Image (cartoon, rainbow, N blue to C red):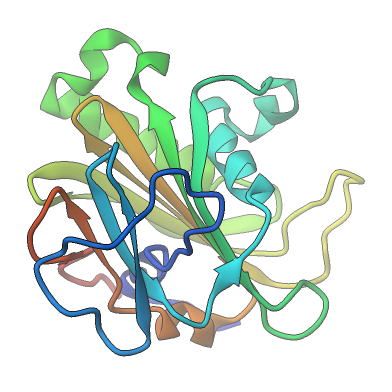
Length: 230
């Protein structure tokens, strides 16, 4: 599998579907929806996302697992009980494992109350937290990082993203035999964290999902990453 650009991986993670959403409705994004995309909104979180129209809703367990890995780390994942720290907002997929190309993408809410109170109040502490979440989210047995977690801003909110590729080790301690890509992103927004996860075995699909956008409140959708690192 060829190496994927950091930009491609980051932009892919914005592609999500309104499956499992509780507060969705028409977007107020200040512009027309691009051809081939749909829109999800969450009024409670003042969130709008554009996503690929070809993706359909799937079970959100993979997104929950990724979010727990972000918080607890892979080694402690099995010991992490279901709690109020993680809420799956969106989950979508295309195809299925073992049957050609497939992809799963999702968005999760990670409650700020699950971290020390001052962490999200100071810039350096917030940046470090986001990078640690992303680093843990992309640390899996059998997977190698594509890029170290990078830091940037979206509409003034601090964000981080990272990606990895390889053959993940299953619970039976054997590798799946199928090369995969995983991308994880996190953005701190007024006391809570919005996380993304994308898992796929298709490099072209990663790149195909470029161009998605995010809005916190109202305005023009912003690309999840304004530049690229090759």
